[in-house]
Length: 109
Image 1 (cartoon, rainbow, N blue to C red):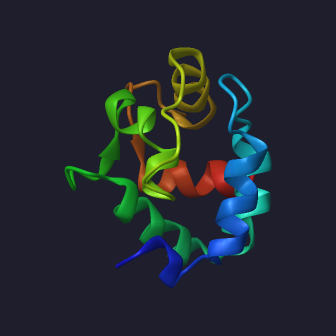
Image 2: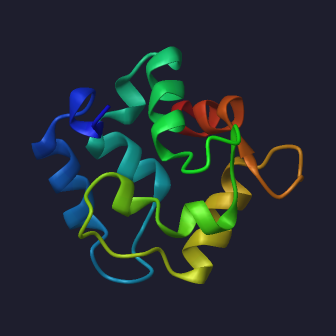
């Protein structure tokens, strides 16, 4: 599966353009511009599985660091503060990782 099977390449490019500079990544804005927030819960969970590199069922900070690169391979890495902020926005149970349900809730909040 490629991310462009479910999201428009143009929408992804626009979302990445908005956060190309370090410390400018805003999750909700990215989800809106990329089209993720308009997807059904099951489609968002499909995207989650694509982002989950090790297929553990969770995203940890190491995977979140490369979040943007899952949408476009030459995108920048998230900064440490962006990574921690993204984790805090979705890790509802405080276990230090984001499950598929938590990811879907964050995208649709």
